[in-house]
Structures are given as structure tokens and as C-alpha cells.
Amino acid sequence: MEPLWRESAPGKLILMGEHAVVYGEPGLAIPLSQLRASVSFYPAESPRLEAPDLDLFLDSADLITSEHPLALTLQRACYYFSVHYQTPTHLPALCYQIQSDIPVKRGMGSGTAISCAIFKAFAAYYQCKVSLDEVQSFAQQMDQVYHGQPSGIDAAVIAHERPLRFQRLLAHGGEPPQITFLALCPFSLLIADTGPARPTAEAVALVAQAYQKDPKAAVMIRRIGELVKAAEAALMAGDMTSLGALLYENHQCLQALGVSTPALDYLVAGAQVLRSQGVVAGAKLSGAGLGGVCFALLYPPEALHREQLISCWAPTAQHIYL
Ligand code: MEV
Image (cartoon, rainbow, N blue to C red; front, top):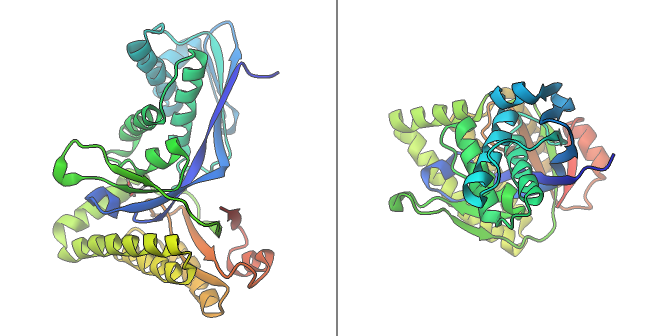
């Protein structure tokens, strides 16, 4: 059966600057438009949530009282529209079906993408013209519920679905972050998964502890900021070789901050060997770390057939062309 409405949102990859963005340094992120979370609204006699991938099925009363993140996001979106667009306060009698290709707990923005898709589906259902800034702000509020004090980079890149540079203006408390959309030349990445990551809030808290106790952590954070600025210039100039070296140094800084793992380090070290053979430009972990994914920047593109590269670097890696 065709849904009444379907909306979707992409996954994301932080190219550089994770953790440092929390402290006001810039970060670079890209949407992964090939990997998406989608929300479909079907006719139903009473509200019902179906998330078959998660084996989650909630009927009317359970859906309204449930504290499951998906149920809570639906309730909050419904409440948002009732306050801002004077729509009914109760969840409409619909079947809310949620599906996602974005691997969960990998630092690829699966939860944020679902928040954006749910919000956009309600906007379509109520025929409200919402801006992407509104989508971003709702997703950020939901991220605050689940991740503590997120910088906002995830909500920004997923809501706008464009590569961007993101920077919080900490000195001007309360001001919105600076977001610059980037026009990037096409490039290719391999994303390799080391398994579920620890919660983002835990990784952010680990860095916060280091930041308070150890002056070297603050130096690392500032260094990441400098690397991001250099990476932005390299990206704009299409200088993938320089970008690769910057990625690797960014990984080393994250390692020093304590958010890498032996599995991530192993893959990044493997990519360094391929770099010395001239088939990969660089690699690093992406997202909050403590598990999750890392990526390798393929350059030059014609150096080695990508299947060969996948088999010698990480047999589970996915090839993403941007
Ligand atoms: C998580 O995707 C990125 C972090 O920098 C946290 C944040 O920016 O909120 C680790």
C-alpha cells in the first residue's frame, strides 16, 4: 500500500572537527544521501508506531505513554505543531512506520535523521510550510534529550542535507552557530564499521573530563581547530593529498583525547600503509568515537580498483561516492 505521506532524511559523516566543535572550534560535515531514514504515514483507526527493523510495534495507549525515543519524538513533533501551527494536540490516527538504512550507534546520525524525517512528515501531513532551520532546531532539541549537550553539527548537516562548516560562537552565548555551506568537488570514501559505539554523551563527557584536568587536552582541541581550517582550504582547492595528511593528524588528536579504540586505530593504521603505496590519501575515525566507523579518503581515484581496496583494507567497508 502506498503511504499517505513519506519523508526521509540522510545519515551524516563528520569529516573533521568532532569533539573540538563542542569547544567552539569549526567542524566539517557531509550528508550521506545514499543512506536514509524514512517515515511513512498510513491510514489507521488509531495511532500506531511500527519500526520493524527494531522489532518495535506500539499501539495506541502504549504509544502515547511510551518513553521509547521514537515514540517520544513523535509525541514531541505533534506537540510542536500544536503550539506553533495550532494543530490538534493528540497524535492523529495514523500508522507511523519508520525504516532506516543508516546503521545505528555508529556515529552516522541515525537518530537525528529520524527526528528530521518525523518532523518533515508532520509538516507535510498538516500542510505547514516549515523552513529547514525549523527542522534543524527540532532535531537539535531531540538530540539534546538523548546526547546531553550536542554542539548542533549533526542536526545542521542532516536537516540541510548539504556539506557544511559549523562553528559555535561560545563567546556570544545564545547566538546561533555559524554555518557555511560548502561546494565540494566530488570525492570518494570508504566507510568501515568497527561495531556499535558507546553513547555519544559518554564520549563527550570523557573529553570534558580530560579538558578540565589535562592542559594537553585543550592543546589537542585547539590543534584540531587548526587542522579543520587547513582542511577547508585543501577541500576548496581539491588538494586531496594535503587533506589526507590532515585527516590522519586529526585522528591522532582524537586518539590522544581517548576516544579512539584499538579497532579504529588498526583500520586507520592499515589505511596509512595504503597511503604509503599511493592509493589512499588518509583516514580517521568519524563521530564521537569509542566504536563506530572510520573512513578512508580514496585518492587518486584510479589508483586501485575499489573492490581490491576494500578487500585489502576492510572487507566490510562500504564505498560512498560524493
Ligand atoms: C557527534 O556526532 C559529534 C561530537 O562532536 C558531539 C557534538 O558535536 O555534539 C562528538
